[in-house]
Image (cartoon, rainbow, N blue to C red; front, top):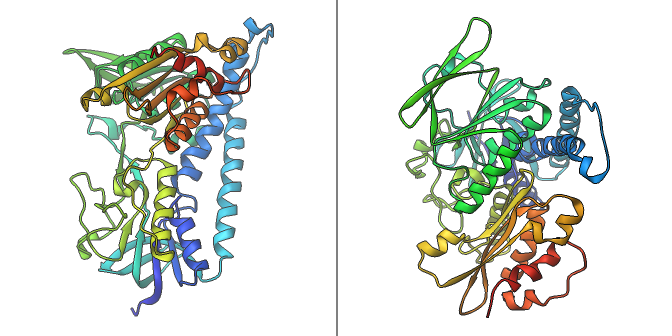
Length: 463
């Protein structure tokens, strides 16, 4: 089959691929955008957008339960899971359809739905979703084909109807007894929201603590917050076997400290991590190198070892966040079209875990500072000392910042509290601008915002 020739091929219509394809097309290049599933990628379809709609619903349920101390007594509220799902679906479809329409209407851009595989260095064969096959060729190829759920090798797991972060979003009834395997972002967000919807929830984490890559005080505080909501957290544990009972229950054998016990659950969510969608991409036909986990290797300009082939977003093994994927696009586009000289070195990597309260993070942690042998000062303020938190009746969590003793610059921050991500972003802007902690300490913030308590946070440092 003779290839259709383009200036650029983009595989994956996610948060890097879609805007990149549109901008390249608007710059005058002939572009084909190939998407296996839906426009918008994981973020729009089964990541950020749908999960945050459910987080909002779970927050409303939590407030209904805990509004008594504020003088508002709510009795007999009902969780309508079918309506929660419908609201989520409506929001997702609005975003997906809008993005699809926008791509379809972009001049010089052809949107093709199908599964892409390399058959030569820069030649792609696509098995079209509506039937048939088409071959495409271009000098520039951009891979934004994302990642998928890691399915651990646990005896009997394949024999039960387990859930992933994608399939769980199709539930229209609240699970009676949910087992979550994995105590990091995905597991914690879903575990907490389903507890608030009414499920009994158990979280199994193999490491000694939740979110083990964070500082120990954050992990311990998060565990305390979850246990206050009657979530059963079991760390240093692993599921070694599953069995489907005749009565429809799932029997899990859980191992901890050499001892095994059996527990029954109605549903199981697998949330132990994600792996790149490179298995069936045909990279062996290109010479593009991958690492031991299958992530595509790129340089600091996001180009692979094969000139003209780039990898953006989760598939390149960088920080797996939507905003990083989008930033990948801006770097690549500006370098190619605007002849800039941008790279990924030293870019900030902010992130927010949307548990309630949120955990907003930027820069290095206290433990990372110690590991690097840096001379730092740690400022820490309980949310119980934040006026806005007291006034709103939610004093869970704390603020924490890592500052360089000599330069007084902020090196990192962790905000576990209401609007934690927003407060973290204020500190990120300070870090971007080189604003030192002593200036923030006496900065005039509007009262009584959460960010105003950054004054008090840095007053904890004695010069």
